[in-house]
Image (cartoon, rainbow, N blue to C red; front, side, top):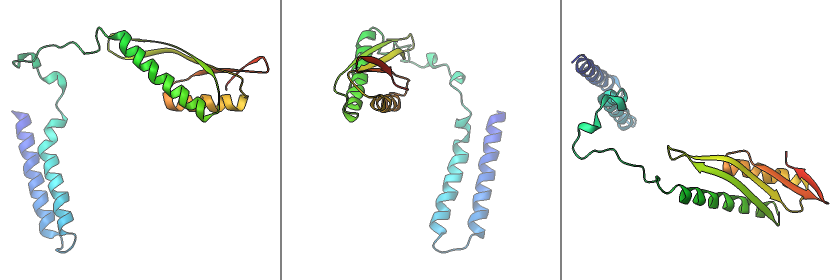
Length: 164
């Protein structure tokens, strides 16, 4: 009951403030803008109790028709991981074309955890004959696009080189 009293007091104070601002503001071209701002202020006061609600405050089990549901990814782990690997391969292919790298091999290890999150354990790209500058550029583009560190290696004149 105390919460309702506080909310009503907040509404009353907001209405009083809005009225005072409307009364003392000059009329003219800014009138419409002022009404909009005051309206948003009052709406915020009306909605303020919603900001304090927490998920734990409700027992959704008491609502008819609301049952626990199984997330749709369950049982399709391999399908989602393979789809994600395909997206990674697409990004690597595009980055390789931008950096003028003709050939590469992609190695990735990932799995879907119990919460449905894809956990990336490893992404490694081995580029064919390439310079250190191209490898560094390739590595930077991949890290920007994928958002994770990518181990990029290459070969130059028969010697293994690593980006970085």
